[in-house]
Length: 313
Image (tube, rainbow, N blue to C red; front, side):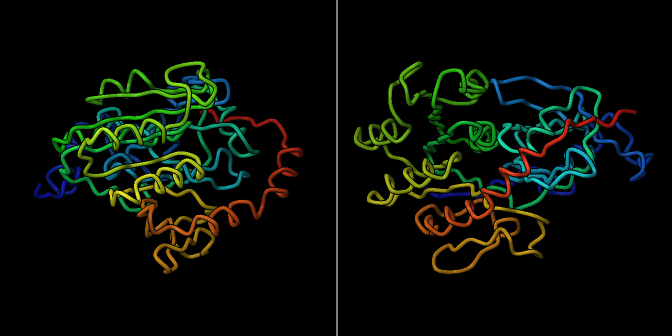
C-alpha cells in the first residue's frame, strides 16, 4: 500500500485555526503572567495521576509524540514527560505522572489551582504518521497514556488500529475506555491475570502475527524490557517497529548530551533526534546501563524529600 505522510497542525493555516479556537487571548500574555495552572487533576491509579495544565503557547504547536520538560517547583529537578492529550480550545495539555521518585512525587502532590514551576515545550520530533493499513499500538503501564495521541493520529490517517494494553495488575491499568473509543480492536493483558488475558503484551502480539494478519507498523511505548521484547518479536517478521525512549534527560535541547543513545551504531540524542526510534536498531544494553547510572543518587534524593507547596495565585 502506498504510504502518505500525515502531519497534524503542520501548516500556518492549522496553527491560525488553533489560535482562533483558544479561549485565552495570547496577545495579552507576558512571560510573567504565564502561570501554567493545573485546571484538572484526576487520579488514574494509586500512584498515577493525570494533570491538565494551562499551556496555550505550547498547545498551538504540539503534535503526537512530543514531550515537555517540567519542574514542579522552581527548586525541583527537570523531568521530561510526554504530552498525553491536547485541547487547543481550552489552551491546555495533559500529562500523566507516575510517582516513583522525588520529582514525580513533588509533581503528583500538586492539586487543582496550583501552578507548576516551569513548563517547556513542545520538544522532540513528532511521531511520523503514515497510512500503513494496519497499525498495532502497544502500551505498557503509563506508556498507555503516551500512546493515546499516536492512536488518535493513526485513526485520522485512515489506519486500522489494533491496541494492546498491558499492566502488572488490574489496579494499574489506565485509560482503557479512552483507548477503546479510539481503536478498531483492543486487547488487554495483565502479568498476574487479574484482568484480561493472563500474560504479556508480546503474547497477544505473537498471536496476531501467527494468525497471518498483515501488520504495517508497530508502535510500542512502556518499560524498556517491554519495548525490547516487542522489538525482538517483530524482528524475524521484518515488521517496522517504533519505540519511544526515555533515557536520562536534562535540558531537552541536545546541549547536555545526557540523553544520548546508540541507534544503528550511531550516537543519537533522544531530545532532538527522538524520542521515537527504530526498535530493531536500539542498543538496549547500553540504554539500560545508562538509565541505572544514577539509581543510588535518586534513592538518596527521595529519602531527603520535603513536602511540596504548590504555587497558587
